[in-house]
Length: 213
Image (tube, rainbow, N blue to C red; front, side, top):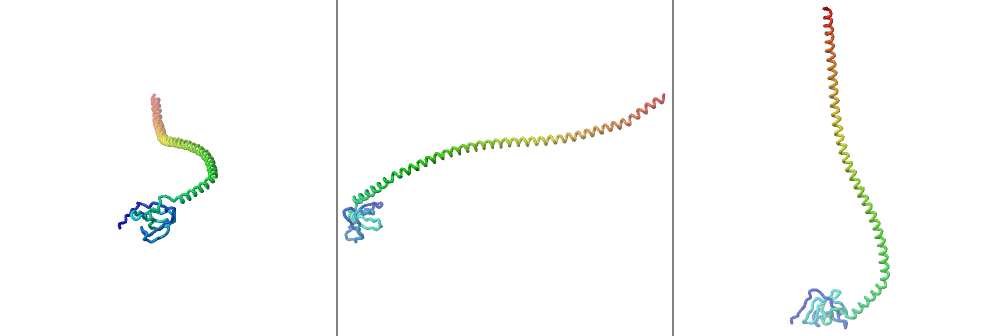
């Protein structure tokens, strides 16, 4: 007998019918051994379906694999399971509802604290911006002072160079003046010597003329 197996691309969930418990067998027939009994509403993972035998290979939440009749599987939880779930959700909703007021009050308190913190941060921001503006003004003044200082240093260096040049010229002029005075003194001395020699001769010549008469 050819067994037609339909393998799913991935495991899909299924729930046991809520009418009774079913058997999980080691193969797709009643001749295979029963591995365990699966209670109504139990969730199973369908690994593949055998359309020929009417069985599906499934896996329990505990990891046990076996075969169950496909007609006993549903695509959604049983009504009993859904009722239990809804009851649990309703209970949880009621529990959450009772705490909503306290949560709301806590949220409002947090909002008030956040609003106060925002106002404080805005004041601090304004103070920081003012401080930053003052720093920028100070930095601009420092840069201007540095530029002015550099300009003054350049002017001082130029003045020093000029002073050194004038001092050198002064020394040269002083040296030239000394030479001029020395030469003038020598010339006066020479003139004095010449006059000292020439004047006596003139006097002698005059006497000689007078003596002849």
